[in-house]
Image (cartoon, rainbow, N blue to C red; front, top):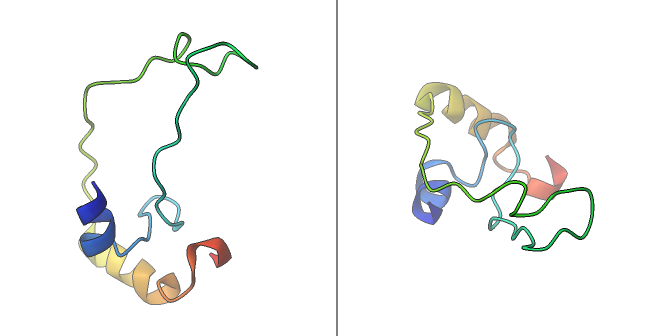
Amino acid sequence: CTRCAEDLLFNVCPNCGGGFTPRPIRPAHHWKGGNYLGEYPARIDQKLRPVDRAAHARLIEAIGGLPPEQR
């Protein structure tokens, strides 16, 4: 959620180190390459992905001062 991305993760993705953005909207129609909701429907289940807070603090210390587009 937005609150976690900003207040707990400080806009640093624990998986790749990039920044968070709103989720892209996948088209409902097959325009190109099969990448549409009919082929890949939206999921309703949530996945819990715990973050190692100590490791994330080290990542933030190393790259947190850089804007996401420069990481």
